Length: 326
View 1 (tube, helix red, strand yellow):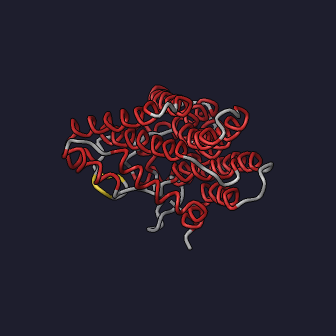
View 2 (cartoon, one colour):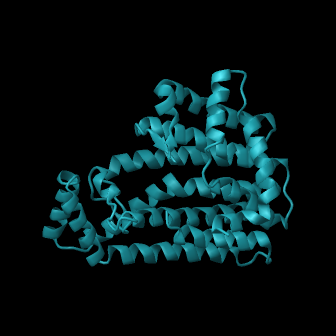
């Protein structure tokens, strides 16, 4: 059994019901919109976000969830999907998870409007049910994600960002959403326990940090063809292995790396040399060590919860984040 299926086992009935509710949450009187949202629903990914919501809710409550949990999962998925649809427009991307993106099939204007529609559906789902506490968690996440993206754009062009700024970028850009899933799950079943909700938010944030560092590392691993990918280098993205390397090499080496990334990022041989240099400077080993540190901190936060299938699944999820192959 695949590890993702194993993680899903304790919440399989909830996930099935969630899919129905999520489909309903997207429905509209406009036929074109229904056609597009139907396309979105049928091309779902691993569904890690709703899984985090349900597993957290069930672990902290001893196995019980309620309608708020389902709404929380639907809202986070609606708003996350809206940001993905907008991202594809911004990145001029034609594919998403191997399928055509909305903008590739229906053009940019429609894609932007669909993103806006999904965003408003998410907000209204919370408002109509007076889930203002859940809405606040999600709204803060959306604000942080936007800030993180903009901070990256502002800083990354200079190629001299510090490790602290990098952590701030990935905390906002990636970790915030997983943190929101975990605090949502806790808040849906224990709305008055602020300490518990904060603890689970922190747990999600730590996993999100480890998740992003793992993504960074993929850029330096050999893929199926046996060639390093180097996509982040081609796109001039600052990743942790690179930041560490730039901070621990001579001025001459540093200017060679920066020049390679800025002016020779299409040159396969040069990109390969940069990857080899980062490995040689222990950039990968350092990033891996940081990733494991975040993972261990996350697992510590689960310690005090009684043993349950949900706690086991969340532990599996944390380990999956850093062991996954793609």
